[in-house]
Amino acid sequence: MSTGKFIVIEGMEGAGKSSAITVIENILIEQGIDYVNTREPGGTPLAEALRDMVKSVDHQEKLTVETELLLMYASRSQLLANKILPTLAAGKWVIGDRHDLSSRAYQGGGRGFDEATMNTIREITLKGFCPDITIYLDIDPHIGLSRAQARGDLDRIELEKMDFFMRVHDKYRELAAQDTTIITVDAAQPMLKVHQDIATTVSEFIAKATVD
Ligand code: TMP
Image (cartoon, rainbow, N blue to C red; front, side, top):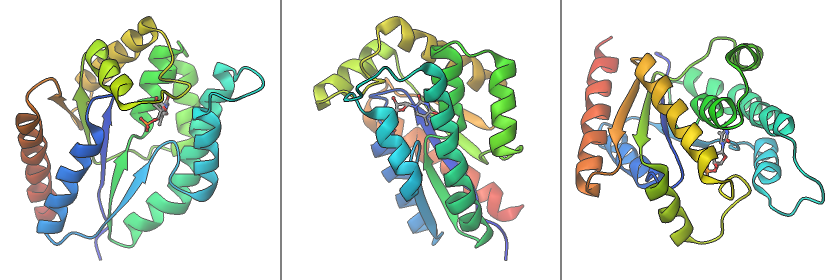
């Protein structure tokens, strides 16, 4: 039995990740491909508890940027070992709502952790594991944040200032430009066009993956 593939959807607040995931799910269903969804941080019981810690605005003390970084990778370690790897080994595909690129953009770009630190913690946690394809939904942070604000309550990270999101955005774009497994989709286009671009990317990926 061949191993499954790991498709990740990435992007900033308000980029439209949720509806993009539905587009991907529909294509996998049409193609008869069994899949499992994950989200990060989170995706296992322990990792979901870490997600709550990371997102909560109710802490009695300030969550340091170092704790935030370590919680993201602690959550990813749990998810990788207990869900992603066993699922792929069983021949199922995984659709990830965020993965390591988020840490590189938010903690690396946004919080300013340097490349060497990020690479060390990635290597400890992931040991070279990476998605087969990442679809990055690119959105101007001003537009994305206003969409997220319109949706309601903001979490701890969404309450950051605009210059934080500008750094995250710059880092996303920089990393996407360096890696051929990251496909950038312009999320500012009309929704139908965004979804068509995602569908084309995923269909081409499946066609290639099922021949290889
Ligand atoms: P979301 O999945 O609902 O978008 O919320 C996750 C939040 O956590 C979002 O603000 C992005 C942030 N985040 C990081 O800062 N680093 C990470 O590694 C991940 C996975 C998410």
